Image (cartoon, rainbow, N blue to C red; front, top):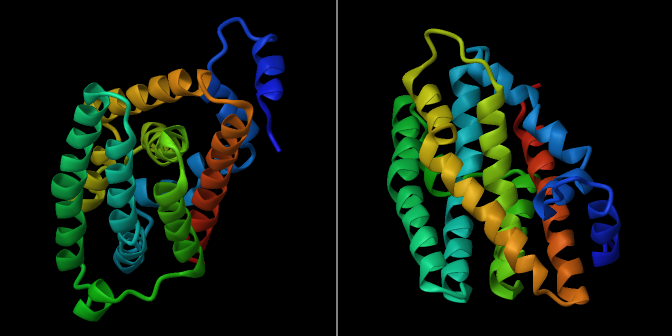
Length: 231
């Protein structure tokens, strides 16, 4: 199990140590494998067939409900109104702009109603859903922040990394835009800063749980994207 002593030893070797940088480092190789996943390159370069993009979005939409609940738990456990405001604003984006992108994608690619209402989720999707629900119901504020940092920072990183081809389907471009814009970058920076701060006050046991939550969330991200990548 990763401990605070591991973090302290790593930080002593750095000029400007940040907890979230360390968490990312101890989550390798899963972190880089997810950020550099070929699914994102295929999508950005227009090599992902429409049906495959729709199938990916159906699976990804399976996280909206547990993720919305996770943010709700974060709002409830936040130590200040300032945190609640930022998280509430993100909740508003998730349930409006992002939800709209999903729904219009399902319409544009003629996803059957049965697949929208009762999708056949992959085992990796269900495992990730279970993790989000568990962290929300049983995790402390720092653990919830750890899961949120992973899910949002990874999506920001791949969106910043990829090179878009001309002529992408508008909804593919819109999906990329949701994760590559100044407001989203600011939110990810805020999440990282708050996790850096909250971790300082954790006791050793809570610190270890937070670090394990981060690593496990990264592993679930990688497993999910491997599973939805077309053969």
